[in-house]
Amino acid sequence: MFEHHLKRVREICFKLPETTEKLSHGEPTFFVRKRVFVMFDNDHHGSGHIAVWLPAAHGLQEMLIESEPDTFFKPPYVGHKGWIGIRLDHISDEDLAFHIIDGWKLIAPKNLQAQVETASWETEEKE
Image 1 (tube, rainbow, N blue to C red):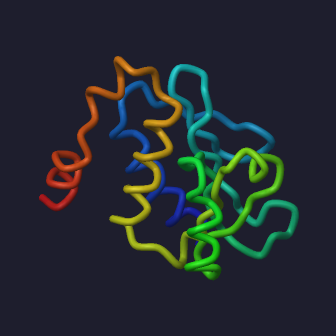
Image 2: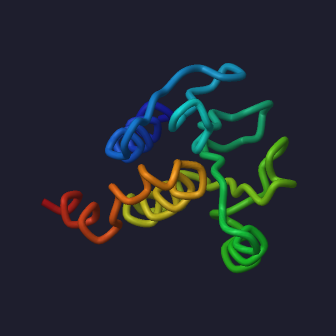
Image 3: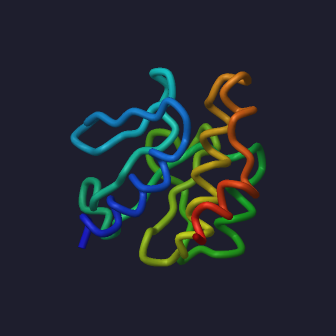
């Protein structure tokens, strides 16, 4: 089950410039220029879910958790920094891609951000 979700996450992350993956704290973790933008959560410490943790714009964490508590949660360790947790069995590929791209843009250097335009990326995804 987790392999299906990890494949979904990898397909999105590796479409973003300069993405690398390595294990961090025993979980696949995705980086842009040595900075984390997605952490995979395969039942981390018995959490009971398969999810990703990623940065979110200021104020978004609370709004998402309040509006969709089955999908979004405050992850341990990074939740106090505004990161969001997303349960992968509760989100579409399109919505997941939106949040991953958004998180990447918060972490990536400005010169890389210019290379990613969500509209064109979504078009490629649908082909």
